[in-house]
Image (cartoon, rainbow, N blue to C red):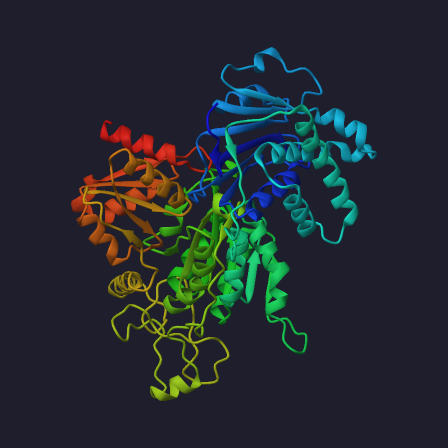
Length: 599
């Protein structure tokens, strides 16, 4: 018998959406976290309300990897519609857990796989009195079975139930009853397994929080001073604004009970974008949250904000496209649309979180950058980061006043002799001065327009004036290189092989690099955190002859941006593309790099 792996297992639970499995899976995942074991979860769910297949992956990793594991060690098949394909996803030597209230079909049997039956349907019919609860409690039975098989203490599960349903003792009791049914069945039958064992790591997750990326962005927006939130619901960004609604009152209601914020659901994405720009023009820190289809509808307004130079934050939680695409699958395919959004010559600031702390930090920083550079700023999230639970160190809150850039009030206008030219480049960085409506000074007023204008905001179709404004906007973009978050660089391999990743691809890239190193190929790494590209990117490119760019889209959108920026080194960039909508796994990266190297 093989020695079980310690705290290293990947469990996939296959159920039907809307069957109550979400609660069961969350209890299982949180119990492993409470044991102090590094772990992560990925939820693959359909875009309808209920009935279609859903898969929930729980990975416990002694090495702390939080990406999807390519090999499934344990498959729970609790969905008749997909059980045939599900049993073929588990690795050789793995385990299939099934409901043996009915006989297992012969075609579901595979050699080299251990089958463990749990009569969940029969158990809940016998012990759960309320018929309407039986389907949901059937899922809790496999939680108990897995707990007994892999060593999750019953007391830990009970503590998680109390944390989750603290004010509902009847709910705790009914769930615990179902969990005990599965636990005791495994105990009574003497079923064992040798795949893995979960052992408590005292203090292993002490001080860490568990949070989804959308919630981290919501908190970042609140601490970044978001005062106007205009949005239209769209998967997978809706939970971000819903989290803001739930939390913002705690921070943004004054001692008189007055709300110092507005969250407004618009009639569509076009309206929400124009509300963001209107609020930004009058001086409020404004934002929206959307996904690819919504971003497409916002393009004209984004162009207005770029040319009229109005601040606003657009958080984009990327999903599968084009068109409606795969609303509940992840992708990184809106990079080009954010970076060059709208018609004409545009270049936008894009901040790219890669974990929960950066989702919080880059969101609040996006408001400072939007006001300093007087432009739309995009926060490029994706569904994997946004809608899955991650463990994280606590966030570091902003400790400096808001950066409002070159905003002039009465005092500042008086100090410069009442002179104000709205679109004039006073100091060569491309960023003009601005005022907001209501500033009580005769020089403060100007007319904001999306048509051609000169340095004094006057209408102009003069060719020379138009070119000057476009050139100044490009200078502003170049200035932003020194203000955006710099990349994180890991050098020292001496192999001349570099890997560039961004967003949710980072964690899979970390594991892939460990695998490549173990196989004899050490690599260096650069984690991109923003566009425009910071100066450190050029240094990294010059130092490496082979550069693999990991991204989750078909066309290598970031690779193309890098080639455009560094045309002399264009042939060094080799895209590593995964775009099936499923969170990227380290094995996919390793395979694609090896295939390009001919190994």
